[in-house]
Image: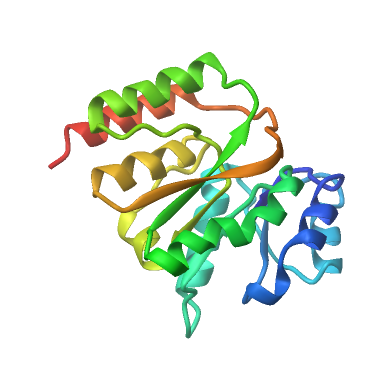
Length: 204
């Protein structure tokens, strides 16, 4: 599943390099792009969904709704934003712990120095939930039933943190694998991250 917002430059390489023989389908959710993102995704053979609000979490929820409506739901989903073409080659590594060991969530860890905000968020999650994530990046794979069980709701940039917090809150089995290439700078909703960490900490 590929959330994309004006990623016409990077999206073709990402879709080209995916291991298509291992995938049942490729879905691109266009987050109200103003460039050729949708056109290029269709040309590459992807199913294109549209999320007019432009929200990252809303795009992921749009895809989740689509997959949930299928006669045969997927076994697992891989999330790769449209600006992470190097991550396409890591799909086999992302899904291997799920297929081979029954892990429920696998996070792709990105190279490069982490932002101060990411370090603070990761440290807070560790303090509250006793689970240290070495990265907070958006590239990840997850068993579909486990994803549904999370009850995700964030429609903005807080989606990624909500997923990690809900996963450790529910005690899901998690793993991490390194990603090739350099990390891509992206906006992080630290206010939303703090909200999810504290809100779920008070939930029974």
